[in-house]
Length: 619
Image (cartoon, rainbow, N blue to C red; front, side, top):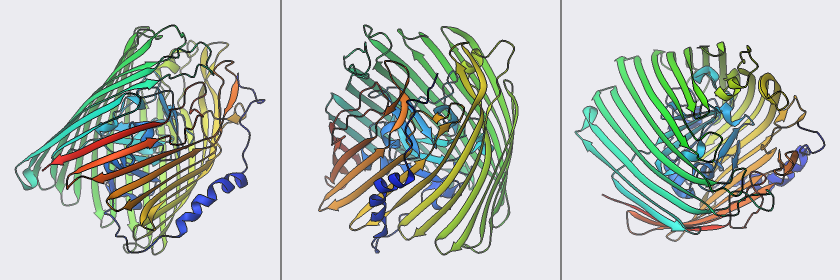
């Protein structure tokens, strides 16, 4: 049981501001003369295509260009640029990774791959570590409760992963310390022109590392001190067919295999987990009339695992989705949505019989703008009714307003409620004859965003209350709906030109707490900041990527009691230069300062690493 004696000490907001305000002060010195890049379009925030600065829910997008600029090796490394996400990675490539969005549990963050939910149904959370970053085109991150749009698990927010969209024939090869090496080959071909063109694209990748010991033998008694290697092989493909003006269909496929050594509970064993992931998604959009569009979405994600020394030797999790959306532009600036979807989950492993459940949902949406362009009021409203074969009916709502108070300035407010479904493991350990309820949340936020040329900034105050949280009682070995939690905080984000370079900044101040135990929620930092700066020097593009995470509550690996994991600061340095028109040579020094504090107590912090990379394309 948790005790208060070793709870995470409170950090005053004054102390947090003293640490982070020197970095924030750099944002007030932008230079003019930089052209604003075209707005990146996203669809996750409203299930409607819109530029990122126009979204009412707080949204961040990481594009393929961002991935290449940061030279990120895996999904966890990429997401560390976003401070509203707390990352807990237990070792090198392929190691278990947890992601907490706005303090919500990892199982309360909905992950989509090309629109299809991706999660292991036994635990209810996504296997982030098995998503090959070489196969990712962009990542859309929407913070805050979106259950009224997507149903269960979207309590903390939604992360949508769009698979790689190759353009022409391209290659990416590299290697570095810890016996790290990778190679990626991608290609695309178009047949025909105009509205009826057919486009094919595919990407094949392989990444491996000799790794390091996942557990720290000095902190985890009995840990196996050997190096834990990881290998990841993946293939993705897309077929896009245009039928006529306003008529298009895309089929997306992805298949991945990850083999990762890890340190389990017996240090004498050589633990290895092999996971196979495949996803298939079909998205078809059809203009029925000038103001009407029908969308059809079908898909499946599946994860199979083999773990000879684990609690379950093998198993399989599968999620299937079928959905329809009818969209009607009633007036200029006003769009109504009606959606139907059906999701079916299935899980089986070597220790438990097959479990299935189905959720069917009906949703209504209204996106509107009152006033001239760049002025007036924006509105986003959603209602959703879900019916589950496992936990009954749930109704959710989201209402968001944006007021253009002055040129470039928008004030926004949002309220929502949501729910998170119990996992199959939760249901397995429920008392006999007791059906677990879903976990419920209420959320409110107030935001201010500013845009001026190439600069964009957003500040968001948020608050969340959760009830009916599922708690595991180690005495009775049962799960029950008794826990409560809360979080309040402030998110800051800004990006734009500073001097001759470009700067990105994020900072989060929050107070995620387990109210039932009156302690902090584990592995969530109360304050964090991420700053990156990219500077052109002659033919070189230099970059620095700094991430600070404050102290957080964790579990002592030796005594299993509460303990404080100290703050950690990591610095990555990058450099790249073109070799002719279509080729680039890139270098990266990760953890340049040799930070030794781990993300998860008892596990080894990733050591300093150096990589070199060559990427290019043939036209």
